[in-house]
Length: 146
Image 1: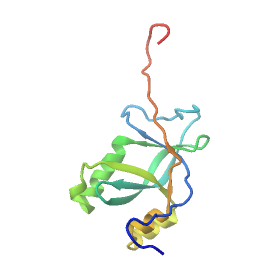
Image 2: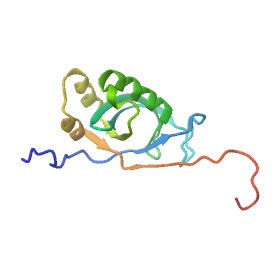
Image 3: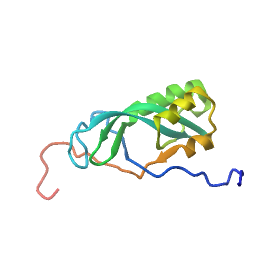
Image 4: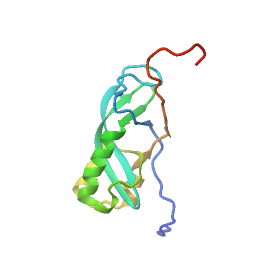
């Protein structure tokens, strides 16, 4: 087995779609794709923060079971990442981040109890099938055709 840093890290099969909600005034109680009522579910999110930090976060998110869509408020996520980085990696505060996917709760709990390498954490992760972007058009009057 190749143990070089360039060796391919195997992850589990992709699942869920992801939307990072940039709107502070929109909660998306209805799915932006199918308009079904969203539920609140906890997901163990796997987040990469530049330059080389990997965090797992057990977070309550909006979820549409019809579309398999996880919706996370950007402001909430960034506040939590700021707090985590203050404790674990102060030099990473404010750096770019990427929400990679999810992991099973049992794997997340194991990572809370014992030291788990980044490679092992990624191998327990399920990347997102796709990241969706929705633009909200404010309510109001618009000329015909717009």
